[in-house]
Length: 171
Length: 171
Image 1 (cartoon, rainbow over the protein chains, first blue to last red):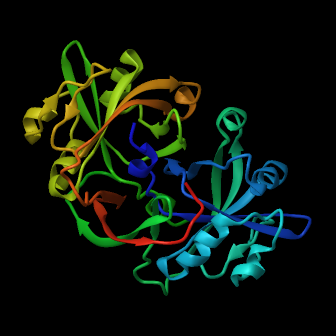
Image 2: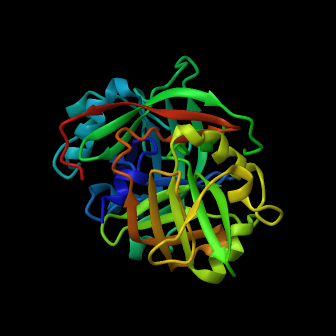
């Protein structure tokens, strides 16, 4: 069996922030999908091997921060380390800004930040799969062509390429 | 609220094939995520407004076919039409090949084909969210740099761009 995740994974790699007792954390995540257009729902896998798993379960809040290729090294750094041992904001020179609706911070260096509340935990025990509702979204309109990065497995990333427009009735 | 799905959606757009009573169908899908590495699981939203929804519910089988930019027009065509009215293989000049493990066909024009069985339906009634297990995967090794397409919303697609390699412990 070839590595199926290498074929289907490459949605944008994102940074998920959580916070508990004033201590923020960051984790790198690639396994997510939109589930509904309005009241936007995002389903995502946050493994129980991650320090963020307990923070998310306890607080029911997080921020999905979408980085661009300029900070790809920091994204991978966040994925290679554990918040159990280090403060990733300090280690990787990322800036936590206060969110509006949740206790977890926004990462200033990301072009988009989605404040989320946990909406459904029925698949958490079996798959570590959380359904999040995006309750507030921030986009930096100064970033004209955000060049997202998409994990292909084993540290290989695809960088967002050209855009094409096709005649579509799709939303 | 900006369009959250435009930010998070762009995993590769795929073509899902189903079949019932010898009649195959195709639908275009963008909302999917890997959920487990081994016994590969894929979670995906297949709306109950799609003709494929009933076919999948009835047969519990499908194929996820991964197209490249060369057939982007056909991918959008499959998304803009309904299998209730037309045979999409004929309409869009796509070739159905027999699968090994499931009744749904492989699309010959796609560089990868993942034969799937439905593994969990507990989120189908609420979110139309199916958990699929990939039981057989085919990859055309002659396609060296498959250039996938990633829906950004409203018919805008990002085409897979350059690849970069970063030092990562991630799988």
